[in-house]
Image (cartoon, rainbow, N blue to C red; front, side, top):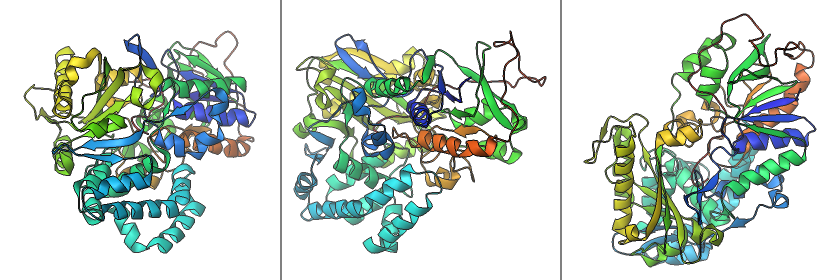
Length: 560
């Protein structure tokens, strides 16, 4: 009997399992998919000579995360690689906004758009240098991060007090207007905010755009050499060297609760897997509370609040194998790992408005990844392994374009949306299509089928909007990994601090389990399946709850 069962071998589940194994616990990880990784996986499914990342690709949050750093994954063979430039945003006049590897180079580029914009960028960087240690502590420590928050508050006072706090709460459109005279700085901030589901007019989008830009400036947007799967492989190797077990193809359908305490899980195959000390769930909050745990073990208020849980926007992704570099009109885009494509901040606002009204955008905002530019091992010399994604509404009410897209995402709709994205890319890179030697389309429903946490393509485990962050994540008053069931912990992106490949939800859940075990020692003995019935019926006579989806994969996504 393992000390802990972890549901889901996504990055958060694997981080949690590693943390528990470091503390001497025996750990068994159950993953629904045939391979581990959740939204951190790669393959050669587009072209045999090209490595493609199925989901997330760039990892500034992993580079900044003390959780990931503490695991010392370099000892497990993980190597990070960088593109020459971090981020580019081509503009309609042929110029290009570029987030370079050095702040001085970024500032010099911005000055070519408007005198003084370089100094404005350096001012933002100075603020980051003052606040970043405490910002990262707030992000990556369990909620409430009291000490880190006090230090951050002191730092805010020293760096401008209420004026700086106001700045970080601004919509990103307003932050760009107040900070820069030219367009380049504004689009770098606004496009970065849309890595989450935060439109240019959303409160707090300025702070998020600033955070993503500063992470890119300080850490770059690194990629694992050889593919995203190399990060997962390093986590699995580390865990297995410490005695942990990862079992794939094992979908968990129930968390077994006795006397108010989680005592194990049951799989879709009927196997009972007991846990001596804890169960950690790297699954979305709606799945954990709405499917895996019987409602009779949960407070009515939690279930009512869960009905208000808001997912982030869906995601539509396309992968390509290209026989040459992308023919960008703006040549500076060729050196960037990540490229944003939209007609300035106004184009981003138009896109966000269409999402808000439930319409599939006719001119989608494109986040484009040049993976061979970032890591030369991804494809043969002179070629490119590329991808792009855009957001679509969770509930589609109509199509702002002319293809009549409804969100059923059958073959016709998938191909039409992929063509729409390619049309946008052609605007900025004429001749792009002529270089395509392989294409793979991943609609929201396909993404969910490959990782159940990506509900209709949601990559953040729930909206990043202020009303579902901190103490409000995933529901009001549930900002910590502990759940109403003793010994059960939420370890997914649905928990604080949310989406991104940084491992904090998993580490926080592991820490809570370790500290909480002492309080459970006096509880009744853990559940042990009866002899001869390890794959048999439930240990109690109550009827089994219905399950719409099973848990089992960690959620994450995009440049995180």
